[in-house]
Image (cartoon, rainbow, N blue to C red; front, side, top):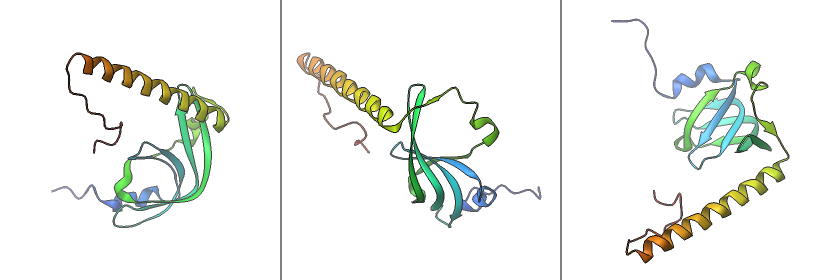
Length: 136
């Protein structure tokens, strides 16, 4: 038997303490911060946290400070390579601009969905009217 054992529990986070991480949450938010603490439930404490909003090839950052994340909301967690972070082919813009673009994209998506639902209903198909993201 190998002496090397891979931990798949929250103890595998020990090596990530005091490192800059990207955390993707269940609701789709992306947080970047320094992992300061965690517990047996994989609840996380991030320091100097920013919420990064991506739209196309642009992004905007919202400063959030200290952020406590319930472990069950974490979808993805990864260490950020700070040497490669500045080489990203993305353009930073003011967060207000990113939020405006995101709002416009969401309105266009809602309009397309309404048109699709209307066309399907006219053809006799049953359409689930629950809003996107509320199905689970």
